[in-house]
Image (tube, rainbow, N blue to C red; front, top):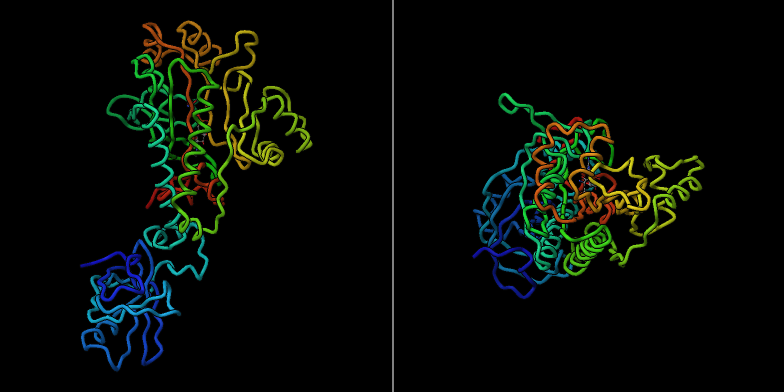
Length: 429
Ligand code: AMO
């Protein structure tokens, strides 16, 4: 019976494995193959003089990255990876890979990102790259788990929508019969409407679409957003949830992904909660000091400013009390000073991970705020209606999964945290 390669130990007597030919080393009378499956690598050793005729025929036609089946006796051997090797009685090529390969899976030759993404199916065979996606899977699992354990309902909202949520410029229009439609920028309006639906605690992990004009190392045109919305909660309550989610994700990876982390070369440090909080005004001061720029209330914190604040903070931190004018219409202004609002950003020293807020839950105030932002209420009726029939106070946030993983694993480019990135120039594979 076929077993995963990681289960073949020096004590195993006989094993059948399937996988890909990772490397071939031909020393004349002796040929070594490294065979890889998703669990590990094993050496297959062939002594030409002793090997069965069938095995010798196979090794004549074999190429790297071909899919093979190997069965034979296992021997403990110090010099081989994992301290064991197989001497095959059966060595079958299930599907031969063409040569040359579009990408070297052995990772000896560094490849350009574009070359790697063009041949992503081969790129993810690389143990280091594969480890990133094993960890991504673990992170999303831990986040799901957190929400389920805490009584949240997993929702799925439409990705084809009629209105912008986060501003009009980053919107992808699509052809939807005779109507104007867009790809959803965020589940924002839907998760809020479900607060009027009485769900109280919802979460969604799904795609968001942003028509980012410029290629940067931290923007995608299709990203994965971890979203939540909670009724009878304020911004402080959901910041606590956000901290917990980040810590839970790191904790799970630290506890279960030793081997994957080692492959990537990361010594993972789990962030400690509560994360420090600074106000937007304090962030401006730090940024002005750090960059020499003269930033004024109401200015966006650009990349350079963010980095300067990140350097000083050194750990995950929140920026709170943002100017109402630069946050979306749904963020609730403070009663005693409506120039600032109950919005927050969660920052990693390298970049923003999440934003959220307590939302306006009163219909008329929301209409005023939409109009104050220069937006028309046309097209928003479906969203505004629930606010007239018993909308509870609520708060929530959205966090980019790729940014969470990118910063956790210290990846240089956000494209390394997503299997098939969509950017300004990339629509395939
Ligand atoms: P915001 O627009 O700040 O807020 O997005 C929330 C988080 O989503 C991630 N993100 C992206 N990641 C990669 N590429 C992009 N183009 C991209 N755009 C956004 C970031 C960001 O911090 N509705 C609000 C959230 C809320 O208030 O609940 C929203 O979408 O990590």
